[in-house]
Length: 361
Ligand code: HEM
Image (cartoon, rainbow, N blue to C red):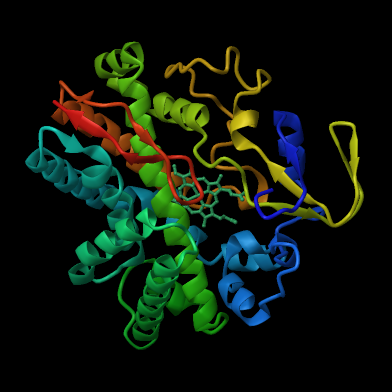
């Protein structure tokens, strides 16, 4: 591991499912093991960073926290958000059209769209949204946990704490106010800020890079692009296959074994670090035949691009809805869309993605 630690990497579909199905023996509630060897524990800082973070706890604590934001991602809530998402998509397509051709699809569409959708979900005041989206884009360009990133992150958490404080006295609409109204007595401001921070962190970068990479994959597979243009109703299976084939979240969060376990015939002792490779599992021939081929008609049921088990992506319904709206709208608005240069792969954060995607039409 980069920090000098040793870990087990689990790659087969069956074994990855076994790990993710068992939060008792493969725990997310750890921090000590992820410190570089020899570094002293920063308990207060670590505790503040973990408060309310679903990915840093196990059941029953995880179950208690997750049921609070979960209703915001129900099918009914997604239907209610659809018109707003369509409008945000149209506005970003206008911005892309104004800025080119040629234009950078990442800067004009993929990076701002998910954060603007998240602000709608949370109920962030309209006046603040454009500036916050710009700042969120800047944050993604900074190395994670670098000095400037940490400063921006601290400002963002202060902003969230102020929103939570305001929602406690003057509840409005959106997830933030609902959380305060329904669970304000059970959770601290720190936990609420942590929960919302994770939703935004987990929902912005992933969806942004998934959108950029999905468009990039289609532009480089003209047969699949033409198929989707000719049969737009394939969008649902296309999105699932693109999620599987790209698997932009390379590994789920690291686990620590709480007992001796056996995976794929290997014995692993307690207290060991275990990491699941989602891309490897998603290209296991046990999942789909000819897994390296991109086939937008197959839908890839059971893929692990959103994880599996108790930590299965909370925002999957929102990400799916965004991708199902934006990809057809983009192809319809720009019938001659094509890449002008090779994709600039790379990302300074947790997912595999693109720094820019130059396109023309
Ligand atoms: C295409 C976009 C997305 C992908 C590929 C993705 C992928 C994932 C994966 C693989 C996990 C599991 C991580 C693990 O087990 O360690 C996860 C968890 C999570 N995701 Fe997503 N995600 C996406 C979009 C979103 C969105 C839009 C939101 C929120 C609005 C979101 C919120 C979360 C949260 C809160 C968790 C933690 C769930 C828990 O621990 O119970 N994600 N996501």
